Image 1 (cartoon, rainbow, N blue to C red):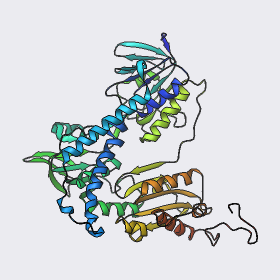
Image 2 (image 1 turned 90 degrees about the vertical axis):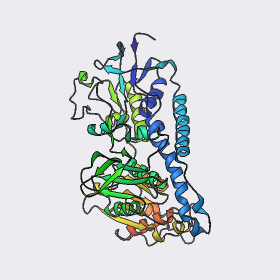
Image 3 (image 1 turned 120 degrees about the vertical axis):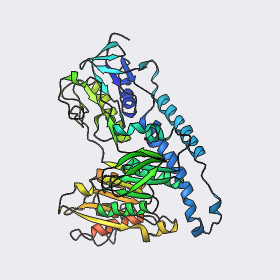
Image 4 (image 1 turned 30 degrees about the vertical axis):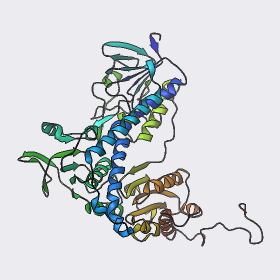
Length: 470
């Protein structure tokens, strides 16, 4: 490797590894630097271990429906929590190994702490490397109030939760965003006595009042949920007292699920000559991932734009392409999609309720309590709303807490991306009986509020001819 590199990638998470794949298609004069464990946040402490835990929790919780199905003996089932956590770690380790192996990092990767010395120089543990471009993909870390650190290992985050050989019988979950809601429900279903707290009324990233209320009501049936007010902790005999002024509990452990912050401190971003915001993050063009007009690109959680895996991977892909391009290219980003793996699934697609302008849209809704397939499976809870443009019927977005919502959300994301209308979607087949028939109910509700269109979901053809599909 010569003295001048084509690019240096700082961080080996989802964004950094995606950037590496693109860069290596064009050059081998690349270095990827990682400070800490190798393997993506998703594989190590995020999406994958949390879903392993959720699957175990949902499997055990299913016993509550057994009597209704005519299956007896559910009272004999029990949770071996240490065994559950051991399986989480075993699968987690396999996911991490797979992510690292698939990236084929080889000699291009080094462990160390990187610091910029300008747009063309990076220092790694005292050694300075010259480079034509830099990709910053340093990821993020959980947010924990500094005064909470005094409670030591009784304060957990998703970085430490899955490392526990066992858990105390009482836990407070602080924060009811996607991670907090998922973990609160899963831990409760596994037998932990959970009390969850949030400062605001919205949970799981939902903004539609009817959808948010439906999910909150469902969660309240499983564990204690307290919203509003600042949460405070203090040491008391027997544990940690958690209060928001209205509710007070004493627990053995606290899971801090209050979001994540970009890992940008001590990176030397001040050497780039661009203005940093109050969090120390420079302005990043979302279309190109470029910082200003510099040959420096910021991808993934580090830029704090959309901290979701597929968005981080897209960031890395774009950064990897532009790091070697004479002129950076902008890319149209995918339709916004967020899925929270509670039961029922919570999801937002495209424009959320809070993003809609007054009078521009109609809302079609469905309540799954009477939906046929949901009732057959004892999953008949939740709501879904679709938002369509008032004049054209073009689908703008959706919010839901619905059984099978993760699948309907993908269908709706495709519809939003292709600028389909409510009537376009109603022309597709809906097999019977499926959960998606609930989506059709919401679409028909929206269609009934639109200017008069076709009186049929089907496309008309010549009564004496044949359609293109005959």
